[in-house]
Image (cartoon, rainbow, N blue to C red; front, side, top):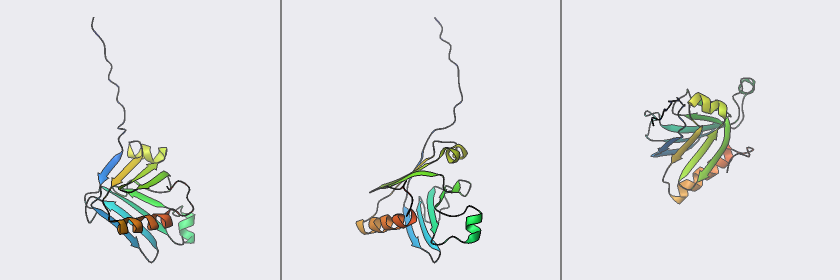
Length: 140
């Protein structure tokens, strides 16, 4: 008996996952910048960046550019907000973005960056993330 199969196109549902050779935690005069990247200069466009200004300007607030900024693999995938959860583990970070961001990324909205840091650098990263996500309940 012949079986009939139908082919159905489904969008890719694959998390973005990479190993970060670079983990940069920077305290700038305007706030925090944290980056995980496969390379030193983000040229490969396999990276995750978080930013948060200490004090958003009135213009930032009017334009919706306040709070935590997240960028992944290019400015085409960047938002203020849209973060559902952000988890720090000893050797990785995992971000879950909302459905609007996931739709734009054409995947499930998960971003994972693995890394290897000394205990001292990991403590620095954890402290900076506590500052970046201060006041947001989705950070663990």
